[in-house]
Every structure is written in C-alpha cells, then in structure tokens.
Image (tube, rainbow, N blue to C red; front, side, top):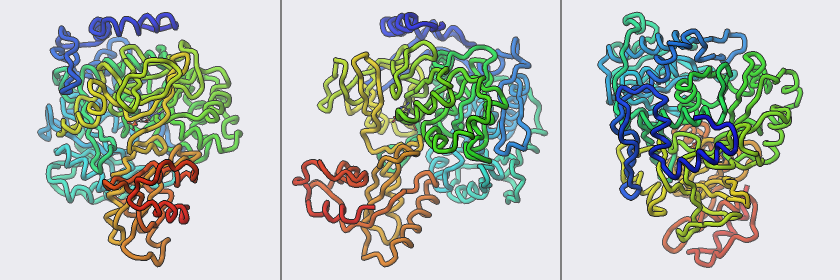
Length: 629
Ligand code: WT7
C-alpha cells in the first residue's frame, strides 16, 4: 500500500482504525512467510498482552536478504563510510551481505548457539555490526546490542540481565580522533559475567588486545572455518527478535523485548511511507545501531524494503564540521535522517562547512530523538534542504519500535516543530492529570496510545510486572508514553518533552535515578537529585544536586571524582554538566524530592517555584538558590 497524497493518508488512517486486522493483515501479505498468519491481533491492555500475527511463521532475514536476491542481488544493500575520510568506503551488495550474514550465522551455530539464546553485541559502527545482528536473527538467537559508548559496568549489567551466552565485540573503535579500547572495556565487564562462554572479536583498529584462550575467538579466523550456506531458522511471529535496553525511572535499565513478525511489518511499512523511499534512492540515517533508530531504520526497515542504506562509523565533527555534508556529496545521499542535537551543533559552525559541498542530491530530511526547536528546524530547512526538501520530524520510542507520529514526506503539510499527525494504526490520546481523555483541539496533555500497533515492545525482559507498571498503570487501558504533548487547532501534534524522570540529552534517554544511584556510591555523598535543564546544543543537560557527608574542602576535586565515577559506571553521555553541593534537598513530608523546584532552580527560573509550604524544610530552597551554578 502506498500513500502518495493527503487524501490517501486520511483514507488509510480511517481504514486502519475501522478495521485494524484487515489493514495490518493486508500489509503483512507483502512479506515472505513460512506460514502466513491467519490470526492478526489478540490483545488486552489490562494484562497487558499483545500478539500480532501469532500463528504466522517467518524469518526476518529472509525478508531482509533472501527475497531480494531474485531481482536485487547486485544492488548495494549497505554503503559503509569509515571514520577516517582517507579510508575507502565499502559497497556491500545484497548477495554479498547475504553470504556474509550466513557465514557468520554458521560461526554462531558452530559454537552451539541457537534459537532463543541471547547474544550481546558491543561493536563500533562497522558493517560487521549489522552482519552480527542479522546473523543472530538468522539462527533465531536474540540479540542485545549495547551502544559502544557505554562503560564496562553498564555492559556487564546488560549482559547479566539477559544472561547472554556470547559477546561479539571488536578490538577497538575509532570515533573522530579518538580510539576506544573496546576489548579492554569488555574484558573488565566480563569479570562479572559468568553466563558468557565465548567472545568473538572483530579486528578493527589492530591494537594489541589480550585474548583469553578457550573463550576469545577472532572473527576473521572463525569465518574461515565455515561455509556460507545457512538456512534460516523458522520463527513464530511472536518469538523474540531482540532485547534493547532503555533507561527508566529506577536505576535499572529496562530490556525492551521486540518480536519478529509485527516489528518487521511495522518498520518496513513506516520506512517506506514516512521517507517515501523510491527504488534507487540512497538513504542515510546517522544514528548508531546501538539505539533503536539504528535497529529499525538502518538495519531492518531499509533492508526489508530492499533499500540502500548508508552506515557511518564516525562523528559529525571529524575531521571537521563539514563531514556530514562531505558524505552527502560523496555518495549522493537522497534521504538524510539525523538528530536535532547534531543539527544544533552543526548550526554553530561556519556556513562555509555546508556551502563547500553540493547537497543537491538531497530530497528528504528527517529528525528524531527529541523536540526540534524552530531555529534549528529553519536552519536545517534553509541550509541543508535549500527550502526544497520536506523535513519529517519523527516521534517514537525504543518501546514503540517504529515511528508513530510523523509527516509523510511530500504528503503531509509541514509545520515547524510539529511531528504533525499519527501514522496509520496509531491511536493517540491526550490525558489530563486526573486521567480523563481530552477530546478537543488546541489542548495539551499526556500522550497515551489507545490501541496496539505491531511493533510495540511486548514486555520488559524478565519483568512483566515492571512493564505493566511503567506503561499501562498510569491510565488504565492505555499505553502511557511518558511524554507531554500539544494538539493544536488543526489536530497536529507537538511533543513538549518528558513528564517523568527521564532526561533526553543529545537525543539519548537517561534515567535520573540511574545517575543518582551512581553518584550516591561516592563515599563523600549521602544523597543526590538529578534534573535536566535546557542546553542550546544538547537540548537538555544534567544538573546534579549532591548532599555531602561533611563540608567539601575541594569542590573541583570532588566534582571530577564524581564525573569519572559516572563515566566509568554508565558512560560519558551521562556526565552531569553541573554539580552543586547542597546541605539538603527539597522534600515533601513523605520524603519525595520535589524535582519540579530543582528543575526551576537549575534553569535559573526562580519566580513561580510553586507552593513550597508543604516541604519538610522550606528554607532549604533559599540555601540551594544561593549556591546555584
Ligand atoms: C523519547 C524516546 C525514537 C528513537 C530515538 C529516541 C523523545 C523522540 C522525538 C521527536 C520530540 C522526541 C521523546 C520520547 N523523542 N523523538 N521527534 N520529538 N521528542 O528513543 O531513547 O527511546 O527516547 O525521545 O521524549 O519519549 P528513546
């Protein structure tokens, strides 16, 4: 089904709501199944339980690879652009990708891995990362990709939570001018991970690493031991495809579980629809495969759609602030999808970094990960799109698996800073704080979803109770997103930001509780409260208020100790921008920290702190204000 006009969009939306089973059932026919589904949807948000295509059988890699070999074997599936512009790019055809995935899948099998086993992947943005992901899916193993910027502690926690049997990593990774010792970090993590039997190490940087005999295996040796014939494991539509961790309101990250059938149908449909991908287009999503954006819109969606997808190993600022635009010109990118934080950083650089390059191949631009401010939207539109490319502002979450609210490129009339309208099948509801549905337009509320969609996360790995409590208990019968949202007079949606204890920093989802519990581990700290405050590039930055055991003699020293602790325990992305040492925190009589007050102080908005008389010790607010950074 193609949506090429606003009329078709409205018709499709109407159909999807009136008869969801027919709508998604029809769409599922565009895929290769071992057994076509006869049951389309069973659901109950009270339990909550959702099954899509539950008697269907398939393997997602046959949809991403095998079926394209008939007419696209020589078409490029992945273009890989390395960190260093001096190194040659790779063009990998569908045939080559198929062969390499099957070969690596045989490596996994040879070491005893199979359906249902969890495999952790901790790799740089090299083609082998995509190959490892697809190889897991080929044999029915469940991949858990951990972003290669996470620390050894964060890696170990994720490996242990899913009880992974294998870790796939690399010797090191190149990021801009830095080299990161991935294998060293992995070795540190593995001291705590008894479930891991083997580690496959891809050689990227060729730096010295220690290899533990019997446990550690070189990727390049392993693939020599096997051939490239590997029939796909037949999976049930509701079998696990992957686990991906995201932050939540407690210290422990949530392993969101995605399943095979619905995820495939939804990511493929939304990829084609939102970006209006046409055969021959080159599509580039700048995300890392370590995040959901990379899973859904670098690997699975584009490959299932038979597209050519570009993978970039580097960073936007290396060797200079023109790198993105250099890559666009070099490869003649048609569709470009990035994060507002990257746009804001590039906007600060001289325009000559943009104007040096010919960007005329671009026809569609996209953003994801956080609200885009009007200034960044306009800059992107004028300087990159030359006022001639629709910008799709795509709202979604790790939990939703695919894009939920977005313009359809060239179809939906745009309004800067608005994600605009829900995609077909997405039933948005705004709630007021008392839990009543807000019906009208020109209103603001909490964003909920009233009906299942095929790519929604089915549970939190090993903790269905937490899944229910986090997403389905705030408003009974609805999935609660955690976001605030406006609906304007035209029925267009604009996300206003998180209303819970998650902070989106540079498009990364960080839980305040996770950072607090790390800082609390410092021997000099008694208690911490972490909030977000506005930052002109990162969107939000982190402000930590810490109560110390005694007067701090050397504040800078303690700050740097705390920063290293956060960096080592979670990763550099979670480092607070500001740390204020305080004598106490504003708490209610029941002991709840009033973060609203702390957020205002951190943003230097002292008027209208609201009613502070209910605080246990209202005078603490003045004390905190005095020391604000
Ligand atoms: C949170 C989800 C979706 C992949 C990347 C982030 C925020 C995401 C937008 C957007 C405003 C956005 C929301 C959401 N967010 N996209 N277009 N406009 N806010 O995935 O790490 O799971 O974070 O990112 O707050 O809840 P994630």
